[in-house]
Length: 237
Picture 1 (cartoon, one colour):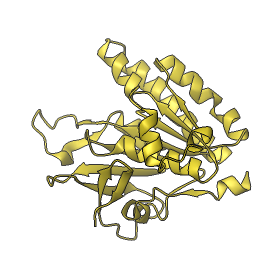
Picture 2 (cartoon, one colour):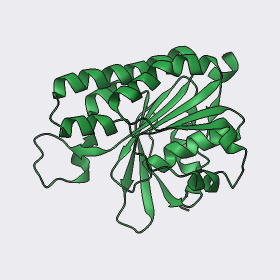
Picture 3 (tube, rainbow, N blue to C red):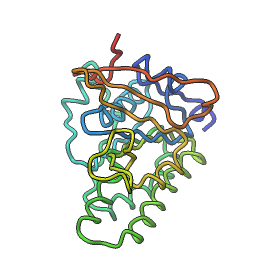
């Protein structure tokens, strides 16, 4: 347990690792959010793959149902053993995802070192679109995120979750990117130890990462730039 608590899992993108002081640590919950095509899913998967390549067990929860084994192998440098330590779960409902979250404490005690959830709000948004009560859904989502934070802090599990963005209430239909926030913003931000926002830059292929919540933001953290390749998130320069 103590060895796992000291584990630091790098992204292997120097720019983002500088923002995260080396990477994601055991016992932390990282929220990655941003617009479409900013690399949220890729970065979450990259952390899971790197954890596996380090010899530790990782779990990638594919709520979107879009992950393919070919992408995992490409990001690992076609290292076949990566799939021996990386499990991919694909829940089909809010309830199934909740049951998976309930099992994470036991999985952590069995050697699981990292869990990545992509996307944390998939079933939340689906149920909202079906007309379910926002109050009830917010309560259920809050319980799930709180459970993730609890298992991270108490079991030494590294946790990363992704979220889409929406326009802030009161900002109108046409809004700048500065008026965007994660879906279920208040719940996700409250429980996250680290919040990383990924942005488009207007330049083809170039993305930007901004650390909005972290271990110590008294020290200035300028934005960092990166690109997305077949191998994953890579340095831009």
